[in-house]
Amino acid sequence: MKVPYFDLKCQYASIRDDVLAALDRVCQNASFILGDEVAQFEREFAEYCGVKYCVALNSGTSSLHLALLGSGVEAGDEVIVPSNTFIATAEAISYTGARPVFVDIDPRTANIDPGQIEDAITSRTKVILPVHLYGRPADLDPILEIAQRHGLTVIEDACQAHGAVYKGQRVGSFGRAAAFSFYPGKNLGAYGEGGALTTNDEELAKFARAMRDHGQSKRYFHDVVGYNYRMDGFQGAVLRIKLNHLEEWMAKRRELAQLYRELLSDAAVELPQDDPWAESVYHLFVAYVADRDVVRQELENRGVQTKIHYPQPVHLQKPYAALGYHPGSLPYTEKACERCISLPLFPEFSVQQVRYVAEALTRVVEQVYEAAVK
Ligand SMILES: *Cc1c(COP(=O)(O)O)cnc(C)c1O
Image (tube, rainbow, N blue to C red):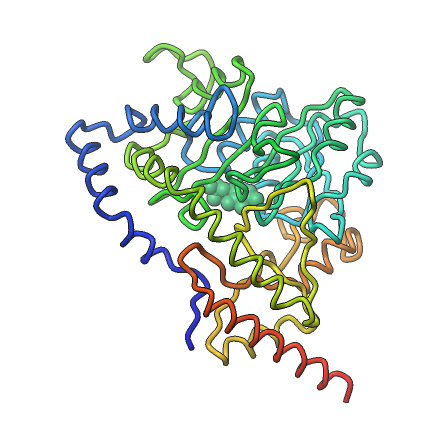
């Protein structure tokens, strides 16, 4: 059996007529940038997330950037962030001139360990930026409590977690603002680049709307130096269609993830725990294994494609070398990066494919273990 890691083509086949009609609408109206479809999407996505405002942007990275700028983060400030994430989380901090201060993960959840946040707070700290990694909500209550006690702002990186629920409430609605990515491979993916900032703060929403459009509040009158961070009309149109399917696709991911969990329960792999207070949307299904690269090659030999999220933690990446971290600085994060393997999982994936992958992985880790013992 050949098992692809991901396949967007079969999803397109299922919504093709709607997508083509929507793209045609955008062309007929010549509303290629922002426009009606984007404005409608903003309303629909805000409602979906349970927030007052959604500002559609050109990427998740831009959304993080504007959330930080709008929270007053500037050169010399510090932002507390996990290192077990995609580099964009840290890059957005760097764009403001602030410094990312990396905190280790709780190894059971792979998300930032709230218990280690207070030690990282200094007089320069402005923001705590948890990431809902793999689509699993970070433990927000203790983070919000610490932030309140120290007068800090919380911004959520929800780029992998559209629709994930923390204690009955959708992520993206807890911090002062949240960033979402609509990169094509995300659970809610555009047909190009896209992102959004969500917030309940009217001032912040206004700020983001101006900043995405060259800092103008009135056409050709510019109050500040802004950016070109606008969303394309095509992306708004596609996202509206896909948002209508998100719940159904998410249910599919959860069902298949649950099956993976059952089938892998006796295998020599570790899985991040499913917390009772959190509903993951399983953007990624990550397992932790010994001799990861060997396991990956053996799976490839059996026709199973996998990926690594992420092979190197952000604190050990070259752009952050000057911050003085070294191997061993964040042991749990580093261990996760050495051992993680992302198994194929997407809504159109079949039960049969999950069974095949789970069985292949179980066999492979057994073999690798036996070889190591010998
Ligand atoms: C995808 C992603 C981003 C960046 O989003 P883009 O739309 O690619 O700019 C940021 N943070 C995390 C955790 C992501 O997964």
